[in-house]
Image (tube, rainbow, N blue to C red; front, side):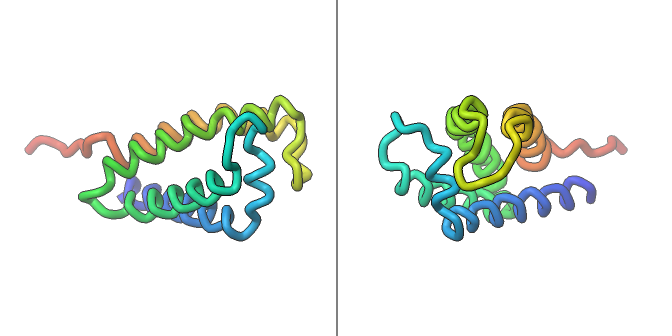
Amino acid sequence: MKKTLFRWILAAYYIATGLNHFRVPDLYISMIPLWIPWPSTLNLVAGIWKIVGGTCILAPRLRIASGWGLIGFIVAVFPANLHVALMGHMPGSSFPPLFLWLRLPLQGILIAWIWWVAISEERRPAH
């Protein structure tokens, strides 16, 4: 029961943040380092990836694949998050530099959360 609740919270988080890529694309595009090509396209792909991942994590047959996809996504966007922390500001926002640095270890917490609700096996008591 607890795992199901946290799975729904995680799904809602990813769906909401995915939709936000379409609502305020400039915020996300500004986080992408200049050396990475096609920032607008990558923003759209990231938004779609989050929406699909958040939705599919609720489907039992797709849950494990979705979990791995979301973990891969976190690893893939880590350079952008590090880039923003190193810049000391997120263009288009007023987040303090400390918040930008604290976001980095939070990626590990998100990975653990995804692992727990989507990939790890359910442990059932033996009868």
